[in-house]
Image (cartoon, rainbow, N blue to C red; front, side, top):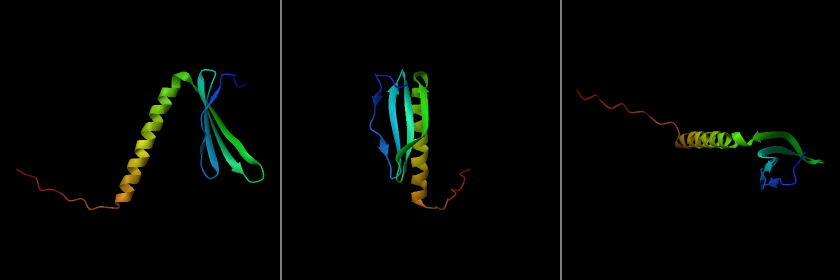
Amino acid sequence: MQSQSAKQFAPMIGDDQKVEVSVEEGGAVIRLSTWVEGLGWSCQKTLRIDEGLVDDLQRALTAARKRIYSTKSLADQGSGTVISFPKIS
């Protein structure tokens, strides 16, 4: 049941997927929808996050984003050659 005080945030829309985030009854609700030709947007998954877990989700998403971008950055650099420095005695 959707609360009267639900607040909808602008959806993030890709070519054939969109993610909507709203605040309902003290927590966050995340909905993943896909575009179905002839039908329109169809909700595939709904995830309800308790308010106590919202900060944990934010930290997990931030860590995932950093890892994704650092992996992309390394891939953009191509394969490099590792040069060993001589040991100084």
